[in-house]
Image (cartoon, rainbow, N blue to C red; front, side, top):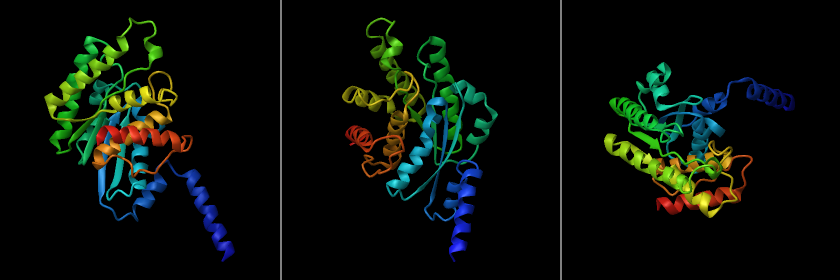
Length: 254
């Protein structure tokens, strides 16, 4: 018996290191009897840093979600909404049936008039494509760049840019009926209340803590809860940091 256990353990270890990422989760899902909730993420490096969609799945599982979040991500490096629209694989995925489609635009969409025009144009195209198959689209309201990226700009420029992000996303939602998940608002609250908590990796991309904030805000949106039932904390992040973010998310969604 001891030899059999050892062989099984060795085989499991070999599979863990040999199979593609997500394979073991897919195998486990075969035995998961919860109804599936298929979600498609379309985005860019802000989306795939730290596997933010994967965090969402782990949060849902840790909170005892009654649905199994089956997540597919199509996130392109330096991806814009225009690039996603012109990407054949993204278009193919949008033709499939999803419970939810989540869009994350490029970080600099509001930095120029052309960028803003493309944000509305291709954002609406992607949203309409998702709606054509019955999937309600959700748009992540992007966080503003960190202070270091505004140090050579006029005073107040960062606050102005944040305001423009909020106005443009609200307008896109009004145009299309897409739902907004205001990660930017939660991000600013956490950044102001706990400046020692690192959210920015380079003034743009998220740290582990920043991705956790995004995922938890999304989980609160999709679950209709304040996120307090989530117990998942990723390796490399403290329980105290997770508690701060959970409290801020809860305060904003209650």
